[in-house]
Length: 96
Image (tube, rainbow, N blue to C red; front, side, top):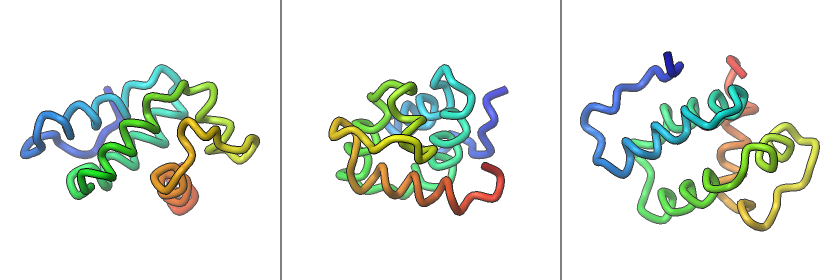
């Protein structure tokens, strides 16, 4: 079970890949943070947003998680508007 609540039906291949990659990180906490964000937003992201999400998820979980949890400053490698958007979503999600 992935945990996803969103079907990939109706998504283009790129968005399907992003949804899958967000839910299959290797660290369950990151699956929940990125996967829930992708469930809620992947269908409606603009082209620049998709590029930025791809950049964020290219980073290693061991670098991302402390930054999302507030224990470390985000690296320039993944810092930016999408990182902040995911972090804000994480804070507002009552399930996380």
